[in-house]
Structures are given as structure tokens and as C-alpha cells.
Length: 155
Image (cartoon, rainbow, N blue to C red; front, side, top):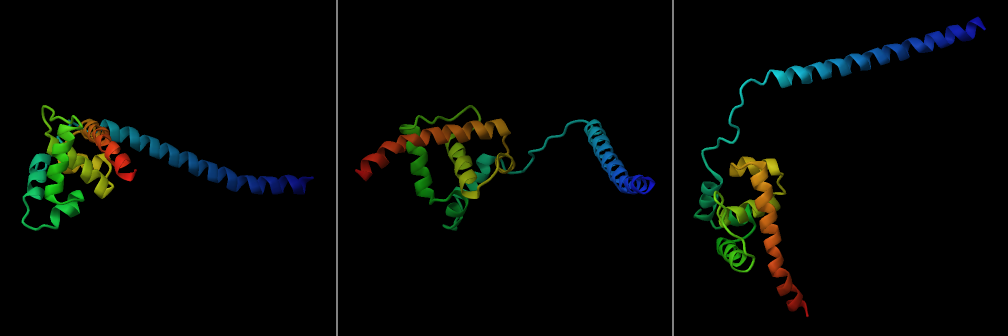
């Protein structure tokens, strides 16, 4: 019996060491998270690009190179303008206090074309996550106006 108990003690030592390492790592990680959250200091503005979303969209739409708008928004300038007008007219999409229809549609298309996350759209268009999400869904909901046209065209 003494041989079996010494083997179990030998096998237990590496397990205890591994457990101690895991506990140490978890402790260090937890402490670093706590210290990081307390040492942030005063809040600072994050979205500080020189170009607002409206200005960026204006730059894209007025670019002399005809390939830029399709690369950025997935369509020609004329199609983009027509889409905005149709969404206003039939989709009841309206400008908000701070975001016009062109920028709403531009954020939506940029998101879809680039497969961008909300945070990427926030950075590019200098808007909050809530604003990006709200306008994305408004444009998405407004696109249902085109559903009936597709149904009639297929019949």
C-alpha cells in the first residue's frame, strides 16, 4: 500500500501546481481589469475625425472618379439619389434633427457593402452607436416599400 499512496502523491503534485497557476492567472487578470477600470481618468471625446458623416458622404458623392461611389455605397450616385427620394416618398423615411436622409441611407449602405460593425460605422460617420442602430433599422424598414414591386414583377 505504501507504493500506491506515494504514486498518488506524485500525480497530485503536478495537478496542484497546475491549479495554482490557473488561480494565479485568474487573480492577475481580475486585478488588472479592476485597476484598468479605475485608472481611466476623465472621459475624452472619441469620435473626433475632421470629417463628419455628412461631409464624408458629400465627398464620396461629389468625387470625380465614377468608381468611388459604387465602391463605398455599392451603387452609382444617380441610383443612390433615386433610392433616397423613393424612400422619402414611399417609405416615409424622414430626416431627423441631426441626420438627413442621405446620411441615413449612406450609413445603411456602407454597413451592408463593407459588412461593417456598428462600431466601424460609428467611427466612419462620427455618430453614436444608438444613432447608427436607429437609422439603420429605419432605412431597413423603409426598404419594405419595394417588396410589392418585386412580387408584382415576378408574376
